[in-house]
Length: 235
Image (cartoon, rainbow, N blue to C red; front, side, top):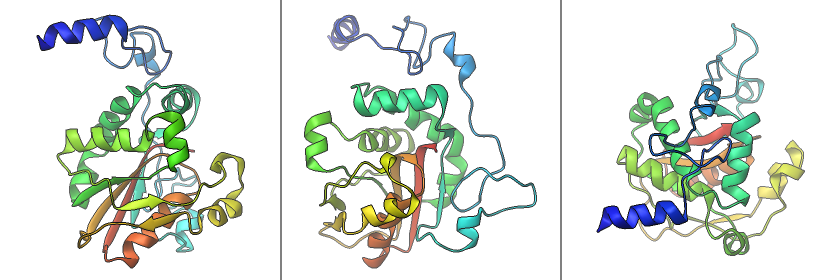
């Protein structure tokens, strides 16, 4: 019965290539045979704190992390926010391609399994979106990625930890300073229990880090000892 239901759903809602949106054959998963050659993890040297690509082989920290500006402890992303990756995340975010979340969760695990295991987070949380955006999109793309990552990693997903209490301007329209100002008072702590010590935050895109850092500050103010961040792509 379950196999029959899958076949029916596959006809009505066929799986599409994450990168080019072409309908996949039964043998293809997430990427078509043409796009699988466009699949590239970040292989450059990266900042050991935030995961940004470094421009010198002598650096271990980027300029911002060397200045000690971030509250979170470590972060990384498997991809750069360019080309097919950028388009597929935009499709996930704005065009209903929810299946793309599974692709990014599996890539995060493949790329960063050892690091995540060393971090040993107690729970995963997703960056929340405002209820008005949730009503428009029908889902929170960061939560979809977080849920799939929880499935492949075995780390529990906790949904009711941080709430988005203010509808902010879209971050993509703002500069660095404005992004940090935009996040002030945007979130509130709603967890009704003792907060675990090690928390992993999931988001779709890391640009300045303002969003995840604002959440990290709230978590640490409420008892978290270590806060880690993973995003699908680094802008």
